[in-house]
Image 1 (cartoon, rainbow, N blue to C red):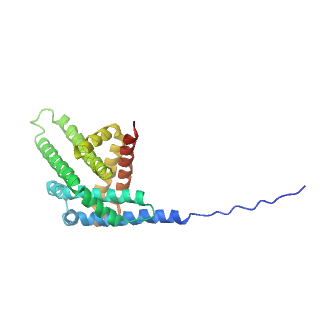
Image 2 (cartoon, one colour):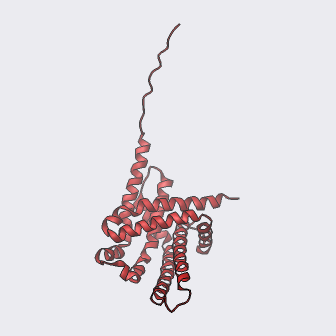
Image 3 (tube, rainbow, N blue to C red):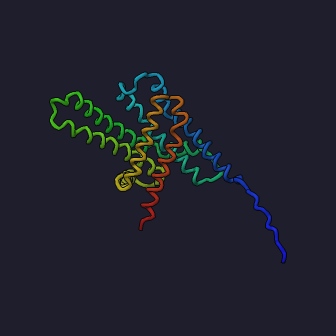
Length: 235
């Protein structure tokens, strides 16, 4: 009876493609944070200079209109990361997406800022006159929900603009509203991640913007992309 000795298997370890993929993500995140900071330089500079941004929220809300086109740029960089594989060019992807989607994204950003300004003023009026306004306790949650829907709808629509560049903005907005309601759990996750980004930017403007936005925005983009593609695949 012969005994055949089996050769021990060698662990091959992660391959070159794995390291390339990891490097692509890290490079895209780092470059994305720098590009986001550059695209929103007035907002970033003001956050670093003003001690209490909450006290001057209308001013910062007006400056936030630059965020929407920069989101289109970073979403385009993430899309390129998925489409191009190893050929990672986040700067080119960001600039291409920023330029291509600027008009639609800027319109969404201005509309969202105007709506949030309206809701913020209403909330301030209600809080200052809560004793004389009947039903003030019921109006506050409605305003908060309306603000959350505005933010969710805008960010989802910006992702849709990047995914469907040839679609009309009205059609993208309808699809974004449908997805925001149907997949409410993704909308809730988006609001939590955006809240983390805003908190980091307010507490530590330089360090927070240098580290936090891109990885969290990638999760938001992945969820939005999955939702849009799931709807498109539905017969």
